[in-house]
Amino acid sequence: MSGPLGRSVDDLELMLRTTLTVGAFNGIPGAALPTSDGPPDPKDLRIAVWADEAMAKVSAGCRDAVTGFAAKLEEAGALVRDDVRPSIGPDHLFSTYLTLLWPIVGAGLPDPVWHDLDRWARSAAADDVSAIAPRLMTASHKAWLKADSLRAKIAASWAQIFENYDAMIMPVAPTTAFAHNTEDEYIDRVVDVDGEERPYMDTLFWAGLATAPGLPSVAVPAGAVDGLPVGVQIVGPKYGDFGLLDAARTICDVAGAAFQAPPS
Image (cartoon, rainbow, N blue to C red; front, side, top):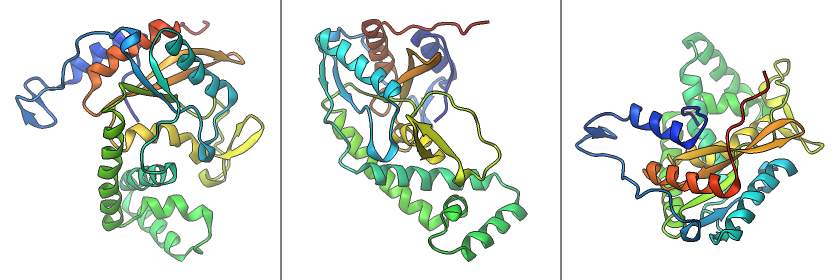
């Protein structure tokens, strides 16, 4: 997941408009992102909620930020449901994202390093967890194309959700900021989530939900937990960037979400 950083939805819209190619969209001359009619009334919003997931456990503070937004939206009259999910299971959503992501990382490696990694991944035992990332980084084009085909099915399953909902709110990450571990191998690193050690790879789960199918996503501030900022991710339909930004404006107003400058 990548994108501009700003202090408000207005900042994000300004940067979106600045980066769009004039006179074309998605390589199609004359095409453009659909426009929006402006921020919706809270009573007109239809919001799906995904606050936690067993395979990518979320800390209580990050989960409460999402459910807190949901409660305020429901109180303001929005339709809020917490039982809406893509028809494709979270394990397939995540594995597809990783299969699409890691070869891109591997492609940036110098050729000698990539070939050494490939040889090591091929020689490692099938149950060697330390070979997971190397195998993905050196995956064949065929494997990537199979994942890309599943990506299309994932996108279709999300499109079905957004036929009935304007946005889905979810965590940005499983926990607040943590001390970066540069000593251990990536596959051996863990993140503490409410006293439970979870794989570093879990930190990619929530970002991957929107990234793999190419959905627009906005991360907005939701206060702090133990002095560290926490956010809520708002995901919308593909190519619905401007509509999502307007929905985010209303959601932020209802939830009282606003940028706070860090202490100097």
